[in-house]
Image (cartoon, rainbow, N blue to C red; front, side):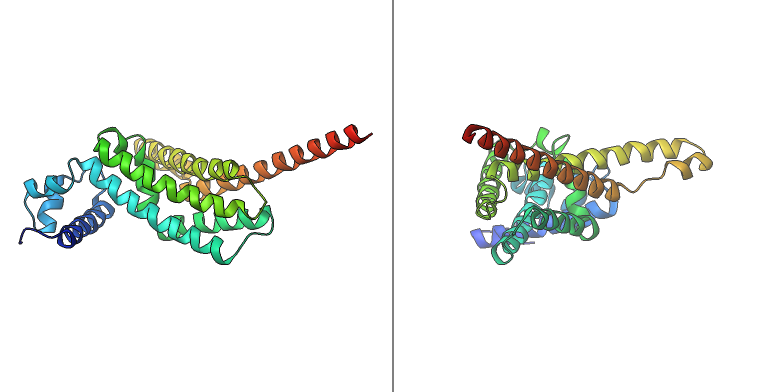
Length: 232
C-alpha cells in the first residue's frame, strides 16, 4: 500500500485504520487484539501503524472519540428541532439516546467502559488533551443550548451527562466481574446469577433522573416557601 502524502490521504488512512480496529475489536475484544493484527488487516506495516497511533490505547481512544462526535451530532440535532418544554422532555431525550446506544452501538458502550480504567492510562497525552478540549467545547455548547429551555441550568445538564458515563462504566465492569464468576460456578448457580447489563444501565439512569427531578422540585418548593416567608 502506498504511503499517504497529502493531509487528505493521511486522514483517509487514519479512518481506514480505525474502521479496521473497530471490526477486529467487535470480533475479538480489546485484551486479545494486538497492534500487529490491526496492521496486518489494514495492509500496512507495524511501523507505519505506530506513526498514526503511538499506542494501542491511543488508537482505541480515537475510536471512542469518533463515537462521541456521533453522539453530540445526534443530541445537537434533537435539541435544535425539539426544544424541551419540561423535565420529562429532557428525561425522554436522554433515555431515548441511551436506549439507542445500548441497542445499536455496542462499540460505544464497550469503549466507554474501558476509557478511564485502561485507555487514558497509556494514551498520547498531547492528543488526549487536544481531543478532550474539543469535545468539551462541543458538549458545553450543546448544554448551553439546552439550558435555553429554562428547565435546567448548564451545570445541572453537564452533571447529568457526565454521570451517565459513570453508570455505563460501573454496570459494564460489574457485568464483566459477574461473567467471570458465572464461568467459575456451576450451571445451576449460573442460571440464578444472569443479568442484562444493558437493562441495569438503563434502569440506573432512570432512577438517577427520577431522583434528580424530585430533588429539583424540593429545592424549588424550598425557594418558593422562603420567598413567601420573606413577603410575610
